[in-house]
Length: 535
Image (cartoon, rainbow, N blue to C red; front, side, top):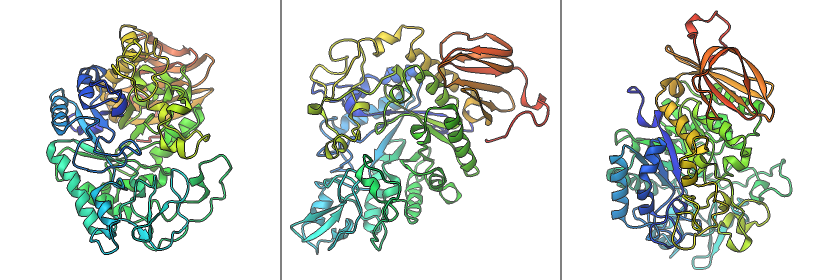
């Protein structure tokens, strides 16, 4: 793997810090809690941790409303705690990626307090102010414009009114934010995940968005309009390139973009000459139906669209979407894991997926997420997938000695301690798949070929000049018999069959995934029989 950088062959593990481990009994996870669990992460086999925002914040949107980009919120600890965590992570061979939130600040950030103090303030143009609002909507419901009594104008907010959008057309804003990146890079962080990268620039004419002809009642109110003029503007790519240039001032760092766009638009964020985001997050497996045909189409479309030389990436879970085991069902969750760990490129997983965590129902009186509070009843709340990590079967799950900030749910059977010594557990499957990937370069950078569906089984091959591996994923509830070339089973989602010889066919159980190393190298296969190369 010497020819690949750490982020190319690495597995990134997202930590939602409020919910990972509490060290001081206040019911909220913190930096020292993450420190306590670093050895667990090393044993799991991941390469890097990505930590959701830990900056000082009023917590209107739980850290995505930043009041100081160069500090640590006391809820999570101190800068000394951060430096200690970073040093200990590096000592264990782990990289650390921080969340960067450039689209908006908190309305309590000193920049905004200055901006709203008067129309003549030097920082007035750091935000988007208008005498009259246009029709742009907030992603959290209602108008995106908020009246400010002090100065008699409206300011724009893509999310909560407590999250005013920065004016990234202002060179002073760019300089200040790039200095924020340098502050953390000099401190030793290994890269950034950039929040809502595709929203950073808005139309300079503030034109109204057109109606969405596909809008239906019951959808979020923000879907009533097509966000033509307040998202994915052409000028954003120049900003991303400048951001990448700052990150490239420091060796071996990575820039990751959060981008929810169709695949063709997503690819543009790699940038001209691949000088945009190193990894524009690929969320298309998060959004597709869980059928063999739908997954095949996502894989094929993504690889067909990938620019030459661009490095692929895959995401199956994060803090904004239902957990895998809830989305696809507990019986299919192991199959989804095998899918993730056998696709080419960089992989990102979400804390707790390795033990099969599911969404936890949140009673109305304990709802925290503003997305749910602003538009109740639409199921927009993200609390169910952000609940505390269950470390053991005690009442507080080993997460805290206090009252957890969100309910923990039914964790007596699904917790780390219970699964640790179960050889047939989801945790053991994740460890096995991660170890197999880390020891097998073919699964990281080998060509992806022959993506096909037969019955309910998705199959594809990973190929390089040393190995041919076939992956079979039964995305169905019935057994299937599959024709397979002669080979040896490397892994099964049932955690058996390792080493079993395959000659001609194999009987797959319901919801089973198999990884099989074929005996014949690709150069020995007759021409035309190997399928299309989508590497």
